Image (cartoon, rainbow, N blue to C red; front, side, top):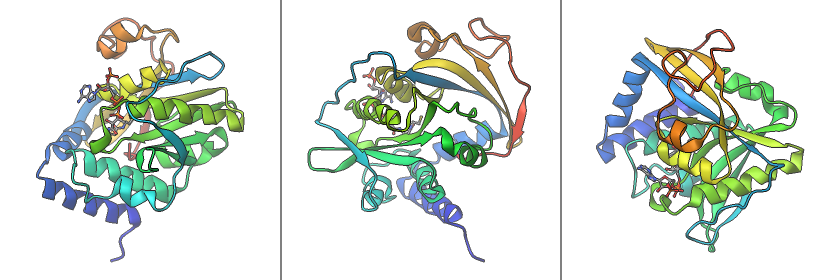
Length: 261
Ligand SMILES: CC(C)(COP(=O)(O)OP(=O)(O)OC[C@H]1O[C@@H](n2cnc3c(N)ncnc32)[C@H](O)[C@@H]1OP(=O)(O)O)[C@@H](O)C(=O)NCCC(=O)NCCS
């Protein structure tokens, strides 16, 4: 039997996970996909608005990903590996294979990569829809998508994500985009905080209804100026019909098999 690259990446991730001794991430993912209603936020940055990009605690520059960065960023043999770490790396390795958009890295003064994220233009809409099976909206011609942010564990907590993400977002101007969107799991507080610092505001919710490993989802628009503190990081926003602030469903539920996000 010949394994695909993504199947190989999965087995390598499970092996790395077993070495690091944590099965919580796999168990959480299993429970989520067995039965849950899971909320993701869509966040946008309007590149036309003046914004002071934040700095990280270390000097940081941004450049395109090079082949030699891949093992340094995504090697499963990293000394520090969180319980989600192998799967986070696996999704990014798979996405490199897919060849969608452009991956940028944040680098230290010594050109050591410490952050990665993909910037994807609207001309890749067809590929985005196919790869992610519809869980991102179709981009307007002047929109771009940012996906798969990752700071390896040894670099986390130094403000690298917001500083690098803000710089990568501005590269979307090079291909004519005026706004950039990104999606974040509502339980991923570090990523939500990073997005806020990088100039993003919540504008959309996506609710994934998982039942027996199949997903249906629906998008709901949010007011563009949702106050961050009370509705998002304060976790007071809930699914439509349970609490205020979100509009009623704009589109019917859409079904999809699981995509790797
Ligand atoms: C999300 C991620 C990119 C953040 O990268 P980072 O470079 O460590 O970002 P920061 O140093 O700015 O930390 C982000 C914020 O979360 C906070 N934070 C860090 N770890 C945290 C934790 N476990 N719980 C709560 N807050 C935490 C930081 O203090 C910071 O908040 P602040 O700006 O208010 O001080 C990184 O944690 C990561 O790669 N996670 C795995 C992949 C992932 O989840 N990607 C996001 C997909 S959308």
